[in-house]
Image (cartoon, rainbow, N blue to C red; front, side, top):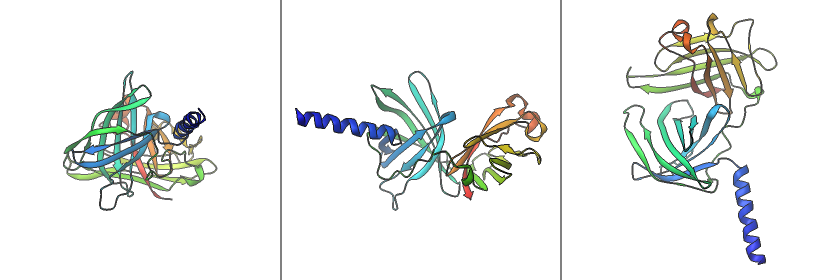
Length: 260
């Protein structure tokens, strides 16, 4: 009985440790039927999701940052990630779905897409794991300390329509305690540009800020800061985007930190 009690205690401790030690989602399987792949990630405020993808049989295996968003319905969760290199280059688009079944996660389907060729490679035999991967670095969704916010963030990806690398850049400059000036130029399809007013810096609340009336039009966005990247998301003015930037352009995007 003592042995059984000890085993149950040990299992409880493992589960508790897992619950307190991100990431809560970890899948292992195959990409394109032959490439071993592992994906581990966590979720945060505003349905932001981030983690790492790992190819254990690569020549020099190392975790690669993935960041994006998760959406939920009654039965299925959908995750949309971009695979980022440290310089902000997007080397893959990832989408997959999973369900929760009796406390476990069951992978439904998904694929990795090459941003240049647009070739899809499906995931298969993706099984949920109940341990933290040894290769997983520190949490990418730790809220950034205001004192560590970088000066420059960017991302680029191959736009197959324009046959060119496109993306966005955002820079920040301190304007007093918990205050920042910003300058954004984003062009995944069409250009959205804007700066904070000289006498109206953004005001941080924790690791994020919201800013309204960019460029004197009814456009607002939220910036959420993490150690490796910042997420910009439209919060207001979607009916006025043609008036503000034209052609539906926005600041939306995940920008990788380039300069501290």
